[in-house]
Amino acid sequence: MNENRRLRWGLIGASNIAKTYMISAINAQPDSEVAGVFSSNPQRGERYAKENGIPKHYSALQQLLADPEIDIVYVSTTNEHHKSQTIAAAKAGKHVHCEKPIALSVSDAEEMVRACAKAGVVLGTNHHLRSKPAHRKVRQLVEDGAIGKVLAVRSYFAVYLPEQSQGWRTTKPEAGAGVVLDITVHIADTLRFVLGDEVEEVVAITSQQGMAEGPIEDAVMGVMHFRNGTLAQFHDAFTVKHALTGLELHGTEGSLYAEDVMTQVPKGRVYLRRDHKIDEIPLGESENHYVHLVRQFNQAVKGGGRPFASGEDGLKSLAIAAAVLESARTGRKVAVGDSLSLGYTKA
Ligand code: NDP
Image (cartoon, rainbow, N blue to C red; front, side, top):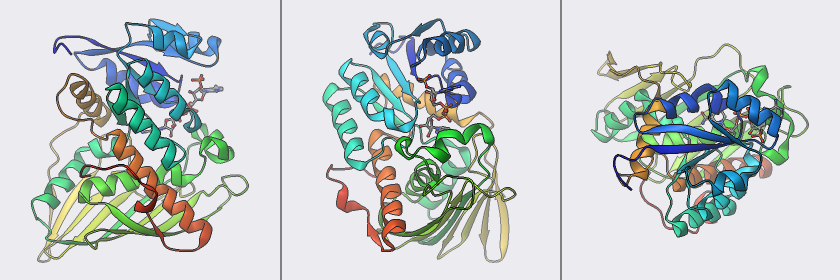
């Protein structure tokens, strides 16, 4: 693709995440803009386009996909639509940036990865936490050996789900409701990223703490066992009002503490503790990380590298979340790799 070409994004889904972060992140790039939006409700689509300065709105997905002006689609509908919309977009020759969880099952995600590869389009997953300066710094420190061999991780992304985000997340199993597909999938991806390693097996227990309906879990704790031996403890919840989020990595030569980092805004602190001395590590960036992530996606579309989180990453992180659900359901330890049949690149 021509390096100077301005990329036009079409939104599939008149969603809150697009309105809050992604439209501004796409329009912040010198080489891209949001050109259109599809909503299943034409009135809502029209209103959404007007309110968000989007030139076109489409009342049928096929209209958006047939529009030669659209280069990339951003799929941010509820989770049960991700598969069919991604595959339709790939068949229409559009690059796809898809929300997480990339799909509702590992086999669906595999179909999506295959369809995009076959069509020769880029598939990315919006695992935005990877692109946060704090997580990039932690990954770099781990790679540089700052804490030696990583033995243990503790991660905590237990928050209170705001009322406006409850809805389908707490009531609709068919849309992939529940904290595991909403939050644990992000944690799985972030841990894979900072450790540069893959999860072999998981054990987990879920709970219904009063926010989600019926059997839908709104809290989970568990452990992921990585290939190189790292044990990673996780606590994710929709129900915890006052806790900070964070990540601790404990290695043979030191420990890293990333505080207040599982957020959508550019904040958080990273500390390195070695020999009883603790130092704050400068992060040196204040740009919103969704902007950073879209920049890298645009570059991937133009032929320069890969998206921050690829379709394969979405698939592998989903496979871990699926194993967590299976472990909670059966009360057993579950191997992650068994259900995966594609060949993969490094996390
Ligand atoms: P929303 O509930 O805001 O939007 C999802 C869909 O719901 C929209 O596509 C829209 O359908 C429909 N919808 C929106 N408003 C209304 C309404 N007033 N009445 C009826 N239907 C409505 O979802 P989110 O933005 O919270 O999440 C969307 C996706 O993004 C999910 O996959 C979620 O997991 C993911 N997400 C990712 C985040 C990240 O940082 N990576 C953060 C938050 C969410 P239609 O388009 O047909 O109009």
